Length: 433
Image (spheres, rainbow, N blue to C red):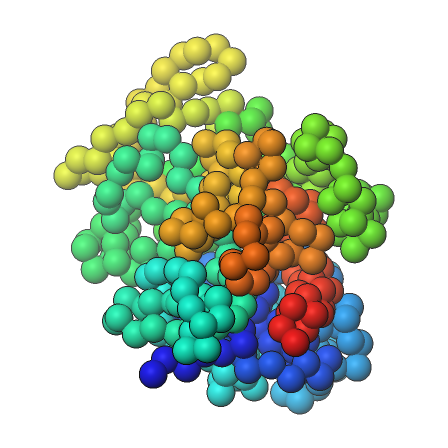
């Protein structure tokens, strides 16, 4: 007989890891199980680029805003691994991404008894347990089933693949979430080796922090390769790091945003966008500009940034990817060829627009059991519970997927991770007596 848990968490990235820690430290006595598709704890493993850092203060970790005395803090991780003083002496504003990934894996290692790794969830349905209570039945790719009185979806957002790339199925075109594995695959195919086997030209699509980091990494990895970065806006822009704007990542701002009308939410989103999207930190922008300037000085430019560019069509041939590119201000067309294309095009938030998702992928089979507002957005409560249409639908929380309802602080970052985990833990306790 299938065991029925109090809570099933789907995904065990930083969001649900923070929840597991909160449930332990806040003393909530619930039977919790997590299902994770990856074979082991990891975080952004495809983007572990040399020299890249995180973009948030290290104390905004898995726990510290909720419990500064937690043993699972980044500071304690450094202390227990004998690197605290050495780390404090590193002349960097933010920690290396590699080190933060090791911190996440270290923290996750304390909860291995609660997680089934290598489990791909195929379907979520509403059913009844042996005591005829409404429960969720979760079916995995292997046909195994799990049941729970409540579900917490913390799978992270789906990559956004814009037109015309969404119609292409080729290892030569891939999203940044597959960057390092994709390069390995291309090397095995003889497309992206080193030395004489290096690609002749590669293209990065996007104007984000990741796009700049990828441009720099490709320039270092393939020093004789032409690297073109195509940006839809006029050019690359610096991230808004004003301390006033950064208050958008305060919990008070999340509450304020939640109470605003959809029209005002859209206005706030427009203002806050440059704090996290379509922009990059000043350090990587300066590094990239210096690189291009020096290449021009040597009459050997290999890296190019082209603004106001939109890819209108593409064709994957034996010799590479052929792109039809429009210059948006003049309407002129360009034809470019690349051995491969990296999409630094971001992720899909929840909502009715073409670039959004109506519901998270795992909710598609049960979407009709939940409410949507008059604008077509999934109705999510202030404590991240999705609002059911009927009393027979079990509790479901979204962890890290609610930017459209809770604002920029719920974006894919650590900024309010620990505080959101506390809110969800308290919500679970109230709804699961």
